[in-house]
Each structure stands twice: as C-alpha cells, then as structure tokens.
Figure (tube, rainbow, N blue to C red):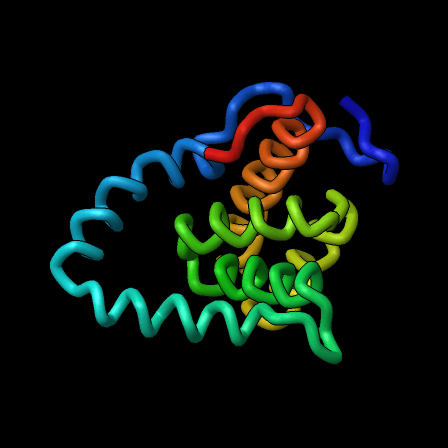
Length: 134
C-alpha cells in the first residue's frame, strides 16, 4: 500500500507494533491490580500531557513516539505510534520525527527508528483496513 506521502507501508505484521501491545496488555493489567493508585495518577498525568493546547495531540504523540525511539522502548514506540496514527499522523510525519532522533541520539536511533517506522506503518495499515485497535 502506498500512502498519500508516497512512503511504502510494510504489508506484513510488524514485530514492533500490535504484537508488542498485545504482549504488554496482560502484564500492565496485573501490575495495575497491584498498584491501582499509581496507575490512576499516571493516567491523570497522561491525560493532562496529551490534552490539546498550543500543541495538538498528534504533535504530542509524535514527540512521545520519537522519545520512545531514543529510549529504545518498544512499548512506547508501539503505544505512541498507534496513538499518533489514530490522531492522523502520516507515515511521512512519523519518518521525519524519527529523523530528528538520528540527529539527537545518533546511531542507536537508526536501529530503533527503523523498528518504530515499521510499527507505525502497521498501525496506519490497520486503520486504513478498519481493523480494531490492538
């Protein structure tokens, strides 16, 4: 599939996208049961951080996605990649956000960036196909 920005989206399922979210889901649920107040606080912080303001949600999700690349956090890449796609980010926007990480983080960002772009394109393909979220 070719996006409107002429970037090819991978046709196979990414090991860095939906599968990461599916694997982490039960683990988060178990930990949430153990520390519900911490998760409640985290949820409030997340809601406030991603609320529209001078920056819209899409931009904020792309920032979080890029931070996930720099940190090498597959769960962050998957979560914020999916959220950025849902917020309307294009593959080109995701690629450019990843490109900034190369400048700021160097070589390791090229590895995590490639994985992140693969995951992001999987989420765009799923949205285009009308699939439910992971």
